[in-house]
Length: 314
Image (cartoon, rainbow, N blue to C red; front, side, top):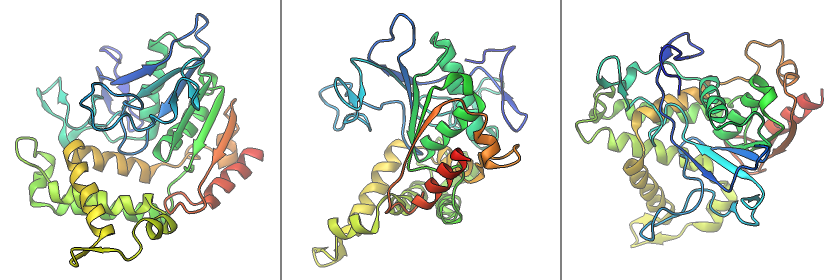
């Protein structure tokens, strides 16, 4: 997408093109192109939302229990689209991609990234697929922020907006967790100012960032239920080894530069930017809304969802 001479103009004013977008679809688009639902993934997700590629796959797509025949997103009825975000590392153009103008990887020279830029690419992909209106856009966490941005910035495209465990902006606590994660990456000797692609990279810093972030995805109740004070081999707590495992797995599939860009993008997001108020921003939307939250969510507390609903009603 965005082939020259029509590159993507970022919110920062920088331009980039062409942009490669990795996406998957499930189900069939009907003759009227009126049954499409776009799924926006969370921070470290990707386009592989459901199914497996081969019998050797250890795990199916991240929303496999929700996308399929007679499931929540019923592929007998709906045409489901999921794309890896701009700035990601699972096939869509990001910091690890080759800059066509230099022949080298972007690294930290990748343009400053906002959720508006991510949604602009998603919206162009939808148009590229010949779809004028989306029956729905759905996402959780960072995906929910994309849903809100899409409903406000491209209101003519969205008929229903489903926002799960998200908010119009990140809380101070969420920004703090992200800042600690980025600092762990910067402090790793393997970071090499972002130009680490010919080495093993900041493995330990990225793993630590994931461990810190993963704590925010677990409620206190779920931690107690799963791990309590269980010890193994009398040397470490089960929760400790679980977090080490999550960090190790994450390093194998994710890029540290992408992590830096995407967490900073979350931190800077505020849906009301450019508007008189949050209600004024939401007034641009033409869609129906469903807002859901978890009472035990540390990153996106229910109070933020209640505020969002209040502003929608206003």
